[in-house]
Length: 377
Image (tube, rainbow, N blue to C red):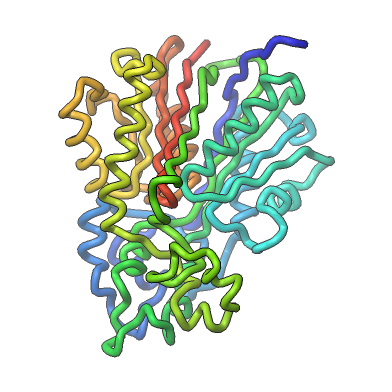
């Protein structure tokens, strides 16, 4: 049996659709539910600290890109950054919260948009953590010697969820035309785009050796915290999901929209931090040995809470080592970690020998992933 070989990220790509959209123009893009300004809009923007974001919809609500198309653009950018041709790609793992179609999988759609020759593919559907699920599959395919060039991509087209038609005429809107908090906050937090990484068994130029990718689900302890496909009071009963109730009844119940339980989110944050602390106790992560921390979070307020919890321990990585572009590109869900990593490298912040720790918490159902990278020249 052959020994596992190292795998390196040799190229990172990002694709952000359209021009940056400032806070005051958000509802001009996603629309106003019942024709009125959102109740939680201004408050949500204060909480999340996002100043600009990108949408794959134009100001008339017409889509300019597909999720798969954005992912294909990100893969092309990552291949170009690695100095590779499309014909050299042998494996594609694609991640998203929701693809363009319910069936087939997202990877099939991305491959179709990417074109070229036959590929081995894998689809990963979750929320933000789907990016590292796909990355682990690509990493292992290179490590096992099955492929010489593998790509992992992640894309989101969140803004299509936020059009007024998803809410109007449903139980999510009250008699005064006010949208429920479970739906309203997300409309001002999530945005569109895609990112990708390319992995190879040998470095060239500045490359990032993947030391490990650890994925931890706590779904056995928590109900869904961010979900679509069930009404607010029915998400714990999978037999009451939209697929059993039917599309028309589900829409009327508000089960088609993307929703968030903020009370549960507070508890899940502590669970994420608890997993990180166990990694530190086990010696898997050494805070003193981390040069750059890329921690995905949906809002500055959540970052502040995570920092507060970590400062009570001996496992805090100094904030000057944290890197984020949330304020300027928004929360792009599963694509965020690759969009962050692309910016970190493009800005020339990483030197050979330095380490980059990527942490991707997911509020879908209490999941968190860790990826440790070491830069080589």
